[in-house]
Image (cartoon, rainbow, N blue to C red; front, side):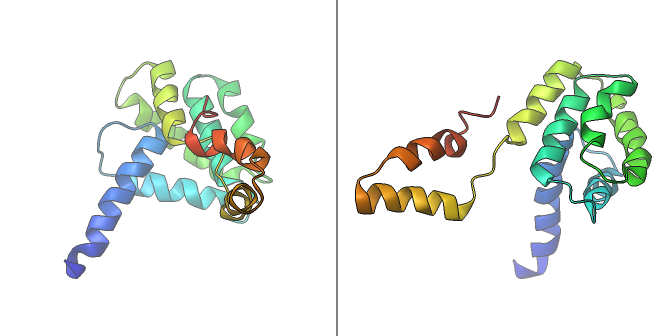
Length: 148
């Protein structure tokens, strides 16, 4: 089992990344496409969660302005400029309604990622002090209610 861990992990990681990138089918270059997108963010101060959400927004549209909100996250977007045409071409290889693709991407790319220390603070306030206000604030983020 341990001897196959790396291959199994990569397979499942890539399946998740395909969904995050709006891809429903397997293609040979998907691993490079996924890792290259992550590399576009390196050293840019780009928020991972926001980048994938804005990529979902970009998938819903075509044309030069479709990627504008994603580009705003980057201090220097040269790597992104090289990556986006590859992603768009890959999307074209499996025709799908853009709105449907964007919905599927948003379902796996959350708006919020609850931070452990904030969740712990909310739980402590509720359990130790009977104060449910912080918990009520955290709950929609943790339960997916704010994923629209």
